[in-house]
Each structure stands twice: as structure tokens, then as C-alpha cells.
Amino acid sequence: MEENRDNGTKSVFVREFARAVPWGIVVIITFLICFGITIYGGKNVINYAQENAANTIRQIVTDPVLVNGIKRNIKEGIEYTLTRTKKEVRSVLTDPELKQDMKEALEYTGEKIRK
Image (cartoon, rainbow, N blue to C red):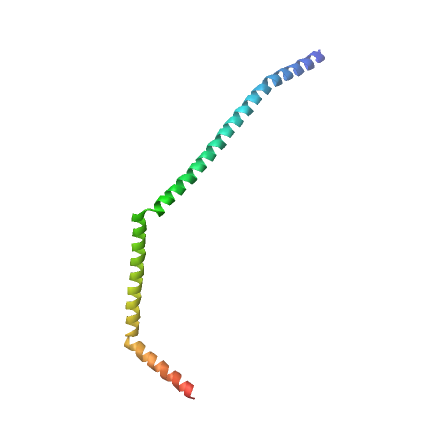
């Protein structure tokens, strides 16, 4: 009787394994197809993003309105910086206290050199 039970258990196991193998193959094939589609789609998305970014940068860099605006802003920035620096230098050089300090420093240096 135990021999029948073992054969029954073995046969049930073999039967269920034989049913599971085709389903496993179907699941694996489905997974590989989905994975392949995802990889192919991902490559297309990356290529599209690269091309789109390159075109956008090309359009921005060659846009005459934008380029002229950038040039104007740079020119105005340089002019402002030079004007501001000129005012600061003038205010420092016209400071009477600074003039006195410079005079004293030069006199002190001259005395040290003479000695």
C-alpha cells in the first residue's frame, strides 16, 4: 500500500511539474518580451532627449534677439562696473584724511631711506 502512495505522490508531482513547466516558459517569454520593449523604448527616449536638447541649445545660441540681448547686458555690466569703480577710486583719492596719511607715510619712508 505504501508503494502505491509513493507512486501516487511521485506521479502527482511529475504531473504538476509537467503542467508548471509550460507556464514557466510562457512567463519567462513574456518577461523577456516586456524587457526588450522597455529597453528599446528607453533607447528611443534617450535618443529623442539628446536630439531635442541639442536642437534647443542650437536654437537658443543662434537666436539673434537673445544673442544681442546678452551682448547688451554684458556691455552694460562692464560699463556699470567701470563707472562704479571710477567713482570709488575718485572718492578714495579725494579723501583729505587719506591724502594726509599718504603724505606722512611718504615723509616717514623718505626719512628712513636718508638714515
